[in-house]
Amino acid sequence: MLFALIFLIVSFSPYLQTFAQETESFEIRANACEKVVAEESLSSARNRAVDKAVFLGLKNAPQLEQDKQRLNDHDLSVMIYRLVDDYVQDLTSKVTKSDKEKVCVEISGYINPQNIQAVRNEFKQSEHEHTLTTDDMVEIAANMQNDLQIKPQSMENLALVYVEPLQYFNGTTSVKYASFLKDKIKNSSYYFLTDKKDLADYVITPKLLKAKPENLDDSHKRIQMVVALEISGLQENITTVSQNRFLLYSAQENQNEIVTRLLKKLLEAAGMETVRKIEFAEQKKLEETTFGRSL
Image (cartoon, rainbow, N blue to C red; front, top):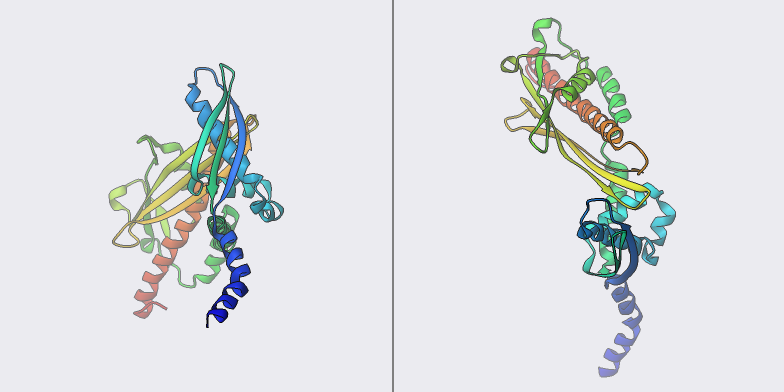
């Protein structure tokens, strides 16, 4: 009996070692420097240097070799920053140089391969269930018009839609971007846009929830932007349609133009999805009126 137990342990030991190697966290180490921007504190430069070093440590890890071969530079960077933000453990940093011009750091930390695989799975899923692009939305909206067989027969049957000014995360608002959104969603056989909120069947409230530019290094920046359209009137509770993007761009590009283009793109994509939801809701009402039930 003892011999059999020893035999089983010996037989399974390679598998146990492989399992342990696959699940144990591995160490990352890296060095990086950041220039000190005018009127910037040394601590801000140090934080950027730490982020940069962790990014480089992960990018150079052998465990991500398959990802470097499979993904383009943009998607690889987004994946690595997802790991940097949420999965690096026991991160320590040491300043190796600090003066008025630059701050250099040395970092060490650990990351579990299971977490890397979890982020890979997120990316694989997003390839099939990715937030639809503007072109996707336009195509779907066009095809949907062919599928909607019952349309309002008179102007009196059209719903009314009101669009609020865009709300920024800091509490300010913008009529300019609300006008842009109106222009993108105004053509519909199911509703009219109205300037009278109290008459509206549906109220759309566009919100910019996040727009956070970050310096990656001397040459590159990234921004994460989150846009949401809250729709009142579809259900008892508010329905929310959201768009979320990471965008990498050159430090030499005009950041205001980058932000403006991205905001418009996300508003249009969210607007197309909102149109779909409202038009389907209106067709369902027409079906119930015409046939006594929804088809």
